[in-house]
Length: 365
Image 1 (cartoon, rainbow, N blue to C red):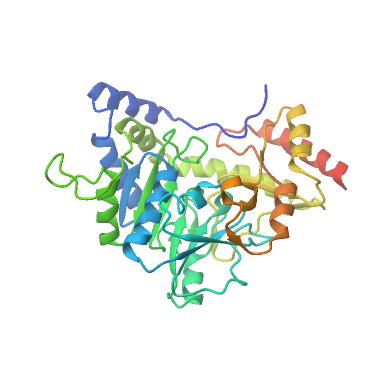
Image 2 (image 1 turned 180 degrees about the horizontal axis):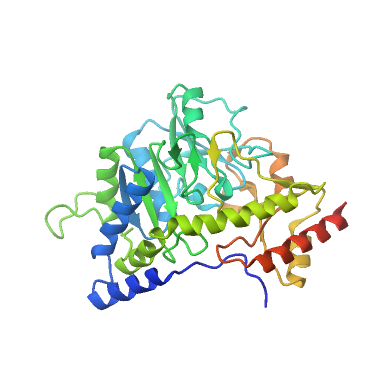
């Protein structure tokens, strides 16, 4: 049986709460678990305002909408290469922005802004790639708080920059609770902000724009709401967050310990004063020709893998977006990949995966 790239951790509490939500009859977007989850997330991570929504993609779409609402003068959004495409797509749905694709740093795989000439009409989208946290407080100091920052925190929940959690230092941010995330509701996400005006706008449009008078709608809205059942699944995991993250830390520690000294392996470098969320373990094998070779080898040995996120220009609908010359993005997509790192990954399975990684690396040298 193949070792999967990921499988959700569903503690008994999650299943108990989900059954309770079903038995209560509150199976749609109303019910006690949504409020409980929103308060729990704010308490745990320091989010001032938070909305549960039906996906991480929805959450980042709300980020884009609120950026234009709050700062209508923003024309261009600087986005990183080699990220999951939902982060780019969200800023194209409403055709409000031009995107400019920046290179990523060779060591961190996060955005590299040193060659970007920022303008007052720019905003920056920060993405914590594979859960490797970008230091937003440092960026704010470097730009003198003159550039608007928004955040795709879908892979970063629980990560820390300096003394604050990821998702708390930007205008607004997104979280994903998809089934391959550390904390999951199957599908689902959250929109977070510290700005009351932004929160009120997001709250209005995420519920179809309905005014205080039922069936009278003040703005063009969407149905972006999470269900009570999803929130029930989520609450059970939030109550076990520390245990889940400890399991993930042990797995990542073991990978790093066993693989960091291999000559042609590179592991994501974490910036000083940051702690990663340890979402997905990514490796780079120097000199690897293409991901297909990696996939073929590991599949034949009963191990599921995933490629590194591809450069923006690989996607047909994104190929004409302005971007820096970025040969590194292609190299990383050929040399980087993700390996199984879910909370309940057995030590014996991890030992086997590490053994096969080392064997593969010998063939590349």
